[in-house]
Structures are given as structure tokens and as C-alpha cells.
Length: 400
Image 1 (cartoon, rainbow, N blue to C red):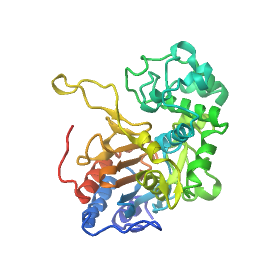
Image 2 (cartoon, rainbow, N blue to C red):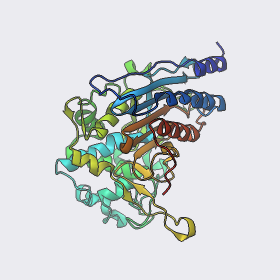
Image 3 (cartoon, one colour):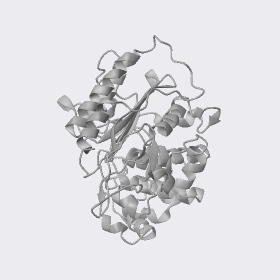
Image 4 (cartoon, rainbow, N blue to C red):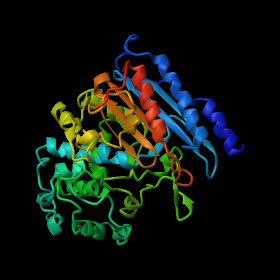
């Protein structure tokens, strides 16, 4: 069948349906208007028609239950058109930062092996080179370290050990704490700190302490052959479609395991992870994080930003691994209260928004970079975030 025809049919026919995780509490009928979630079908169909992405999986959690779970469009356009399914596994890109790396950092903090105020050089002495001796763990988590966003791809050409040596030798672009600049390098550094303290690479640490206990069975770095049939392909590398390998070029050069990118997961697994956070660190009787650690992980911190209207500073905020209120917050939509929720996006087209005040999570997974590294899901994220907020009873825009 012609891929365009199949894509159109898939946009009309929703695959999958509502799903409830075992053990979750029932949602009371008067807590939100479930019927208002139906507009997500129209929003997804419009995004597919615009060519924003080949397909998507959308999951909404409210009051500890999955109240919406649907797949749209195509999982793959090339080499063969393949319908999207609710259990599709995605390259999460930068969702790796909070889910794997920052969660691992929080566990080490909880264990007393690390502090947000620790100098990075305490755990990685070589990192102090070229004026980085004042950079703390908190600076890295908040993207206020002064590090560059991404160092040259050529720095990764000679393997992991040499790449880390070159990162340790980088100079800062700004004094620590004085500037917000989203940095992949900072999270590569955090993963190295996790490994130096725990003796385990970040993928193994997160698997042992987070993914396996939470029964996130589709969540992994370096997915095996058995999982590849459910993985959504991404863009191009050496003129070939990327399938089952990380899209991010620096993570790829590091062997597919890095603090900033490399994690793969399904929407169902991410839903379990987010439910754990909203439940104060516990799910199905298994505790992953203490409640105090979840608070430390997700509470907002003001970050330096440009002036707002009439010279009043913008109320920019991040938490320790999550976005709160910056230019990266489109998936919050127009109604959820600014500065109270948290979330993250991924370059491949993935996003999460968590609104603790309404006990709501919006998970949107797409492979917008397939098949040609184009596509843009910013509008879809914003529209779905707004629709979900309206459905759970948020009445009007709450501006800063």
C-alpha cells in the first residue's frame, strides 16, 4: 500500500485504547471530563497531515490511572510502512537526562554518597582543569555550569576515554551560576560522576536501581534484537535509516551509553516512572526514591535569564534534571500553572509534562526525525498539553 494512504488511514483509525495499570486507584467521574480528551485524535491527525511527524503515541495519567492511551499514524515510513502501536519503543533522546542520569544522581544523594553542593572535581579531579574547579553538581543539573551546549563532534572520534579527557579539558563559556545554557556536555559529566562514585556505568546503575525495580521492561540503553521489531526508526546515519541505535551523534560515538542521550523506552514504561514520582517515589509497593528526594528532584529553582517586559526579570526555572519554566516548556501547554509542574523534551520528538497540582502526566512520544531528520512537534505538544489541562479542569491561563 502507498505509504501516504496508509498514513492517512492510520490517522483516522486509532490503534490501542484506554489502559489501566494494575493496582491503580479508580478515577472519580467528577474529577475530570474524559470526553474532552477526544480532541487529541483531531490534534494528532492534523499534525500527521502537516507532516510534523510520521506517528505518535499519547498517554495521559490522571489521579494515578492511565486515562488515555492511543497510537496514531506510522511507526515507520521506510524501509516499509508500519503502523504505530501503543507499545512502540522510542529513542528518548534527552529524556535520558532526567529518567536515567538525574534519577541516578538523586539516588546517590539519597545514599549520602553525593551532594548537590559537591564540586564536580571532588569526584573527578581532572575536571577542575581550565577554571572548572568551582562547578558543582547542582550547576550541572540546572544547566548553569557555564559549559558549552555541545563540544565538537571531533572530540569524540577516538573513543570514550579520550572523549572524557577532552571534556575534562574544556574551558567554561561563563562563570558557574551566572548563565542558563542547556548543555548535553553537563549531563555527560554527570554520568561520569555516577560511574566514578558507584563503580557502575549509568546504564547499569539505572537498570539496577530504577528500571528493574519499577518493572520498566522495555527501557534500556543498547536495545537487543528482540526489541528492535517494536522500535520506531529515526533519521539518517551514513545515508541509512537508524533503527535500534541512538540517533544522537555524540552518544553514538560514546558507544550508545551517555548521560544526555541513549535511552529507549515505551510510553507504558514512562507512565510507570511518572506514576512513581507522583506517588512520592513508590509504585506497587516498591520504593525507588524517598519522598524528600522526589521533592529535591522536582522542586523549582530560579535560574539566570534575560529581562522580561519593562525590565522585569523573566521567571525562568529548572529543577534538578527537569525543565520547569523556560523556552523548552512548550509541552506544558497554555493552561497548566507555570512554575509548578516539570517535564522534559527529547530531540527525536519525545516529551513529558507532569503537573503535580492536578495529579496529571502528559506523555507524547514521536519519531519526528524519521525518515529525513525533519519534522517539528512543538505545536502538537503545546496543543495536547492545553487540551489535557482543560480536560482535568484547569479553567484559564495562569500567566507568570
